[in-house]
Structure formats: structure tokens, C-alpha cells
Image (cartoon, rainbow, N blue to C red):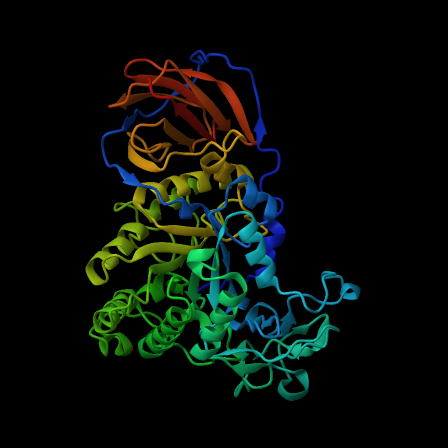
Length: 552
């Protein structure tokens, strides 16, 4: 199972460069049908069908920059990642685990070390919360769940680490900037007997509850603009790898439940108005099985020992049932969002096929998963069956990561992804940026601020269909019950496509404002001429086009 290398600070660095030159205004003219283009699939938008609200929280991000947050009216900003699992709010630092030699780092190092100049009292969490409050963004905060957090930090590059060379050498590798710290492995395997007390201190539900109470005192309760959502840990199925020093044994059903319910109870006691999100699991095998079975067997099914001991139920299903039973027993909902993480695990031809695993019941993922994933319908079915009323969340995802190195293709993939989120009724999503796949600002702006004047995609999803969704996908939404209809068309191919769009149960004005992303920011286009039954338009290769239809 691949483990991603992630650093909490990376998101903030990358996000500052998200949007770039998004918009270029052009004069208002009417576009003629361009000749010589390939014939595309037929599109249909029916404003009276499949109507449901689109949650604005699907347009969230991890560690977003201030400029991006303001320009896109960012709805949710997540504090998360591997190092959040070991974050100690009292000392303002965390252990970076397997991501960087199991070392403790403060939120801010000394200016001489070149990290930042804000001083030893700097809190990265407080800085994010203040930024979020200033931009009207809801904070999603990850709480430590694996039982330990960093015990101390220094400001002179002599940070505590869990595998000091003096005690554990020989080791396969050492921090090149701090050779006293090793990677905890010898001949590829973890060294025996990690001592969690070297760099960590115990931190359970009481620690989490105290942090929530501290944040309520400082920023107010969730309903009054404080931290709105708390996440129960980060990717527990990987703790024995990512945080082997603090949690060397794989997590089973019972431990995950015990830690989750204790932390959720602590959150609700400290702030009854806050929402709780979990289990924030990393990927496909741990949606179904605990790491106890996966480490021992390499795979699992309903007969695997840990799963069989819990009725053979998939771990996600069992987790939801336990929270449902807790609510029935106590009268308090402890879990508000059922949350998973999702990243591509293989190569896709074409690269834009990667989004099909979010929804397509006929698409077998061409990766080691080798299964029909249909992630969002699967999550919806689990919730419907095991804990109705629980909202659906993907607090980490990046569909372009490892799939394409082209920023243009990554933007097309993300626009398609955001359209799917709205179509499928997802409640919340926060994009995780990486250096090779940073946030595609133009994709988000298409939905949140396509014209630079804060106009957005609609908030009520309506039926939109394509006869060839693999080539040209279409999404549509209305503003409220009777407002304008916005249509987003995503051309996934390397050729321009001319396609007719049939418009049903909506009388539009003759000219529709149009914007297109085709590799160089969002550009105002000549208006689209709209007839009684719809319109025909040419969509550039690898592009995203928005057509705003005003009611007549």
C-alpha cells in the first residue's frame, strides 16, 4: 500500500500561488459556430429534474492561502495531514513521524534557521483560525487520536526525535540536517522496541477536550464563529507506518471505536454546537478492514479474524453502526460527517478517466484496487443503511496527483471532480495540494468566482447529461428556485468539440455570458446565442466552459 509523504506546511506554501492570472475581460459579442470542429456528444440540461441543494462546503481546501480564500469565498479550510495527528497545542509543535525522521518540530523555528520570523510564541493553528475568520471561512481542525503527541520542541535544530542514532543505530538513513536522528529502520524494517516516551507524551480524549475548550474560550463556540468542525484523527489505518514510534501496532476495530467515541464525546461536551467528522481513513483497503487483518494477511474479507469478530461487517459500515447505537443510547449525535480520504492509485488512459471511480458503476479502476469503486454512491449507501442523516465528506483528495503532470489536465480533472461532487450530493470536501499537483485555482474559480465579480455556479443541482461523458461532461445548477442557470462543460479530449445542448423547462434570454478556461486562466468569451430549445457551442480542447443563462 503506497504511503504519501506529506508535510503540513506544504499546503500553505503552495496555496499562495493558486489562482495566478484568472480573468481577462473581453467585449460582449455573439459567438458564431466555429467551422471545422469535431462533432461532440449531445448534451441535455433539464432544470425541473433531479433537483437538490449543492453544499458550498464541497469547494474547500487544506491550508489555503489568504488570497485564494478571499477570491473564492473559501467555505472550509482544513488543518490536517500526518503531522496534525501528533500536534501538541500546548507547545505549538508536532512530531512529523515517517514523513521526516520521526522528529518534533515547532510551528516556527528561529529566523536564523530561515523558517519564519514570527517568534517562539507563534501558533500555526491560531494563525489559520484567524485567517479563516477574516475570510468568513469555516475551520476544520484535526484532533490527535493515536494516543501521543510531541513532548517538546526546540528552536535551534536540536529537536527531539524518536530514533536517536546513539540508541538505535545502525539505521538505514539519517536526517541530513540533524544526523543525530535516524529513520527508525534497519535493512528496510523498523527497529525493534521503539520508545514512545523519547519524543512523545500521552494525549487522550481529555487532551482533545481541553484543546476544544481552549479554542471556545479564545474564539467562541462553533455557532458563534469559532472552530466549526473537528476531525477524529488522521488516517488511523496507517498509524503503525506513519507514526510507528508512537503507535507501532496496527489499529483494530475495537481500538478505533474506543478512541473515536471518547474524542467525539469530549468535543460535544466542550462545544455542543461543533460538528464531528471521522474516521478520515486513507484509502480502499481500510474502508473495509482494519490494519490488524491487513498487516497479518495482506488482504481481507468477511472471514478475516478481526472483521469476523465484528460480524463480518466492513469497517466503515461497523463504524457507522456503532455511532448510530451511541446516539440511540444517549440521545446525542456524536458523528456528523462520515469522512474518507481518496487519492488515485494507478495510471489512467486517458488521465481524465480518473474521476470515473467517484461515480461510475461500470468502471473498474485500473490500479491494484482492480474493483468498481463508485466511491460516492458507496459512501451514500453505507450511511443510508447504517446511520441515516450523517453527511458525507472527503477531507483529503487530489484526483490529479500522480495521474498527469500537466497543470491544464489537472485543472480539467478538478473541474470535473467539483461538478461530480455537486451532482452526487457530497456534503464537504477539502482539496490537498502537493508540489506536483497544486490547487488548480481556475477550476475552483469557475464554481466560486468565474468573472472576478463574485458570481458563482448555482446552488441547486439540476439534471445534466452527456451522450459521451468520457469526452464531454456537463453539470448544471440554478440559483435558488427561479434564478439564473449556470452550465459547466468540461472537454476532456485533445480536440475542440462542437456539441448541441438541449435546454428543458427553462426560458433563457437570447444571449448567455460565457467564460472558458483553456490553459491560460479564465477568459471572457463572446456570448453564447441561445434559442428556444438550447444552443450549440464549440468547446476548446482540454477546457472548462461556463455558460450563464439568465431567465427571460
